[in-house]
Image (cartoon, rainbow, N blue to C red; front, top):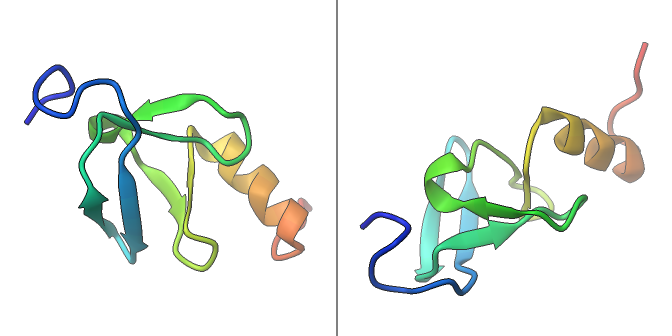
Length: 74
């Protein structure tokens, strides 16, 4: 299913796994936990298994890790 078919423009509910995710509730996108940006499922590359959150890009992912205290920039 591509982003223009089926589930319309509503957010999906996912279970984030190591290297993959499972769709629990179909939708066209998820929302970045840091920026609030919509991320089409076919473009989703960054997430946290521990926090079950999606991130729009690596910068948002690192920011989330810093906020959680699990990563510090050198």
